[in-house]
Image (cartoon, rainbow, N blue to C red):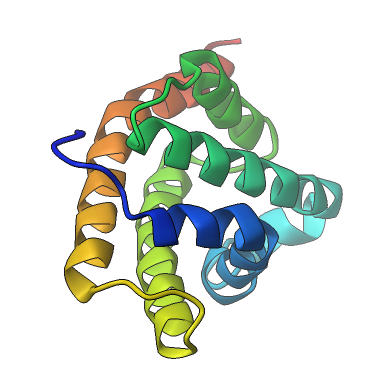
Length: 150
């Protein structure tokens, strides 16, 4: 990661619209296709998870932009998801849905005139996001595995 800087426009957009993205992902990607039983049995987790989405986006943006991130936070994310009935397959599906939602959200906000970026800048950000996910997924999956062992 980090061949060049992430667009300031993308960074500014997320500093203002992080909650808007969290709602966009949760409503249009995260909760679609989710195991209905998990959603019904753990409604409180789903409400609390929205905050985690915001924290995850912030942490990811900071890491992609050259800052640090907490391996423990991602490990605990996996463990919390496992405690609430999600499976490793859900974690992988969540990753895919997050990346798809991020691309759709950035293109949508660009088309709406919320930021002046090129498609190349958006693609660069999405590639960096995928590389970051490659780095953090083992920590998330370890959280799942350790919960199952308990």
